Length: 173
Ligand code: SLL
Image (cartoon, rainbow, N blue to C red; front, side, top):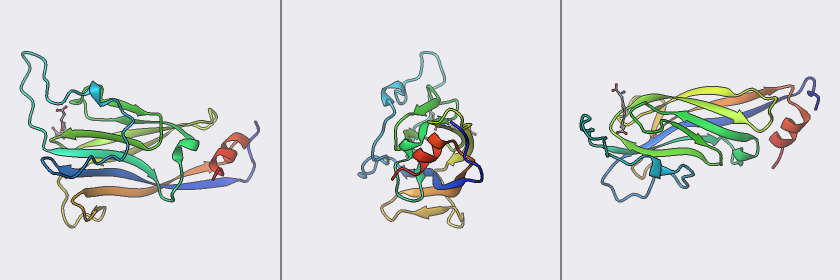
């Protein structure tokens, strides 16, 4: 498939984290969780290791569209690289919504690699954070009104001269 000369397609998105202190009656922060959480068995530390800190927050990392669309049409996989204190800390999500839900006690930065269905489209690397303790004056923070702290930013994927396949996927409604 040839590339389409002088075509540029821009797709805005939001990436970030929503979190909530634990022992709350609010349901899970992810609407739908495609990650197999049985891999991360909470506080079970191997025998002889340092006891783990108590998890204080439930959080959800997400990559979501700015406009309402199914990102899974053109995104094949999103790989979230968590802090190494997490078991299986590289979490791959191959279905929309692209989210990882976990619990924890600490904040850390997250590398996010986005892979596209079109093999000619190189993957994009993004960075975000698990933020649990948000300052009121953080411009990227807001409260959802139902108790979640949200920390996110806006960015966009820019596809220059996409292939016929990629532009068809990007224009699917
Ligand atoms: C630090 N930024 O400087 C922190 C590290 C690690 C967070 C934060 C729990 C992991 C687990 C967790 O919240 N890790 O228990 O599986 O040390």
